[in-house]
Amino acid sequence: MRALVTGANGHLGFNLVQALLARGDEVRAGVRSVADVGKSEALRALPGVEVVGADLGQPAQLRAAMDGIDTLFHVAAVFATTDPSRDAEVLRTAIEGTEASLRAARDAKVRRVVMTSSMVTLPFTAPGAPPATEADWNDDLRVPYFRAKVESERLAWQLARDLKLDLVTVLPGGLIGPGFRRNTPTIDIVQAALMGEFRFGVPVGNVPFIDVRDVVDAHLRLADRSIGGRFIAGPDVAPSYRQLVETLRRIDPRVPRPLMTLPRQAAPMLPLYDALSHHLFGTPRIATPEVVRSAVSGKVWNGSSARAKAELGWMPRVPFEQSLAETLAVLRPPR
Image (cartoon, rainbow, N blue to C red; front, side):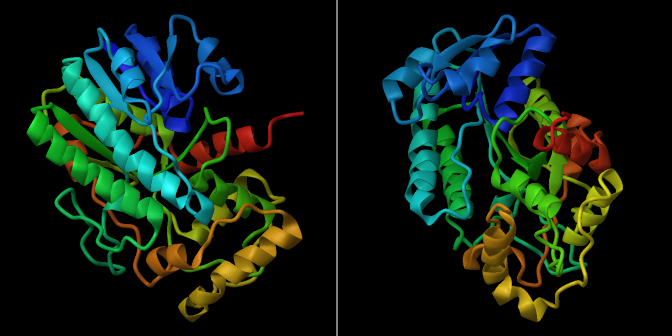
């Protein structure tokens, strides 16, 4: 396989590049700017990789990056949920970047496109309700990142039909595990819990944490098969916030134990609670009113990976506690 990975310096992109190289594939690692040594030095240290500019805002550069490529892994995205100043960038990068990438792939005669979407494109469900499947779409788009992922994936499917591209999409949960060099909003949740965000109370709700290596595995299986459509790659059961803290405490007893589980009626106060924790303890911001209304609203993350298991032989293999421990090893490196 001759592959281009966009967003190769991100959490998923970097792990995917490593896995492709380990298989003996020819890998081109696309980054926004090759001149930014700080963001590409880890990639350059990998033997055999070719680091190239693949800025989603520069169609000609994207087209050049795809010369001689047979498989495009379109991973790049701006993942930000608590900084309103970046909302326009999140949407623009997702929508315009997806169109530019797929048009470049068509022009370069790329054989297959594996695009990273997200479980945020799926609707939340009531507790105990049947899980969402690939046939379902999230219509609660008040969080700009959720809107960006839904609209960019829908656009990708329309473009694939119009441009006659061989497209498949992966819908992963929230990525944890090793191989990241800067926090994502998902990693921020772990770090906030680690630093005591939930010491006074833990909210009702859950997060579909999944190890990055399991998501890489889903991407590779889809690249190697002639199969189309959407594939959810998430946990069998999404851990609750309390389970997150309890698991962290088993790994590191210094993690503060919550005094209580907050009632659902307290959900509207969570952004204020989050801001206070950020001010007092320096924890990352993880909650906005839009995020709380969408994700802590009485419904839960609940997506079925049955299709990936049945048709790809895929399943989550890295235990949650192991994945968290390896996440903590990056957040709290040994002295």
